[in-house]
Length: 463
Image 1 (cartoon, rainbow, N blue to C red):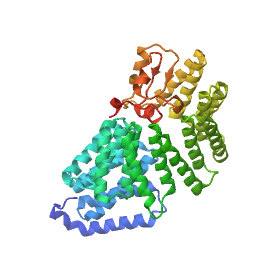
Image 2: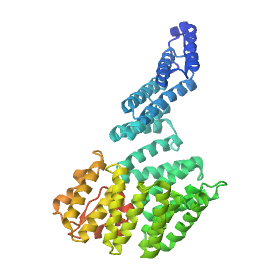
Image 3: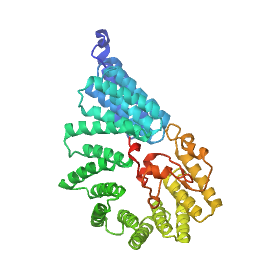
């Protein structure tokens, strides 16, 4: 509330203060005996009363406003979406009435509303309030204020979710610059920002840009007095994947072996994380045509996952899919088909219809049957693949089904289909090679997925 309250309102303050004190004591006394929603309703009424009477100090107004925002986020987490939006809008109104239309506290309330919109897939609404929050903070704060980094980070995450990578990258770079200046290089929030930028570079095939960020993060994590071993393993894997995508296998193996050793030290061998490290190393050996080594590690990873996660876990399906791809690359189609189908059966039970893993398996079966000359089965799984992406894609995405099917309409079906999620066993060197063959229909959900899984882009594809 602004400090310009009418003086004639203050005559009844003593009575109202007593009434409000009783309300607060009621909340404290009976908070364990009445519903959470009832207490929340009293809090809202209390906040509005206090705002109207102009008797609450600024710090207390902020704390009560935070309670309203927390309630909005809780409602959203409980999937009570319309209530969450209404509550967040109420917090924006309270912030505006209390602090004014140009105050950073209003920007914070708007950011909470934007986060709720974002989590519900309402990207246009989220962008509108995020931009409003950014404008307020740009006018109210110094140019390198950490709150500006938060606003920019929110926008970057939104744009990344929409596939607007060219807009996203400069925002992440600015966020990292502000946070490094404000907090130094070693704070967790700075490491998170560096990883986000590096991961985005990686997903866009900009591996040379990603590598130094991952290396810097790794060096910082290793120097901490009590290093987080799981976090170090994660960064080792990201760095290894970046080198792998560039074909620098001599740099990949030491990183993956080190990740494997750290995982064993932290979790032991009979653990899902150890299986993941084995799987990563097996993928490298497969890319190097070291099939015997690769198969041995894939089998070990599968055994660990079955014993620790159960027969029907999605990670078991991923192990089966990896082994199937290895058998396919060796021309052992019967074994590949058996593993692919078992993996698909598990995934159908464990995953939602639009999950990328489903698309990968369906695509693998399309390629398998086409290679065998079984066009009928290839067509069947191709149709299922199309339905899978239709389930996964959202109307607001710039990779909507209408856009995605353009190439398919221009050319007749030939049974040679590649989904957006390319298996590494069907690695292609660049986009030109991928699209240069008349008999191939290239079906991208997004360039991000294709690049991440081995379809390395040409330079013109970079944002």
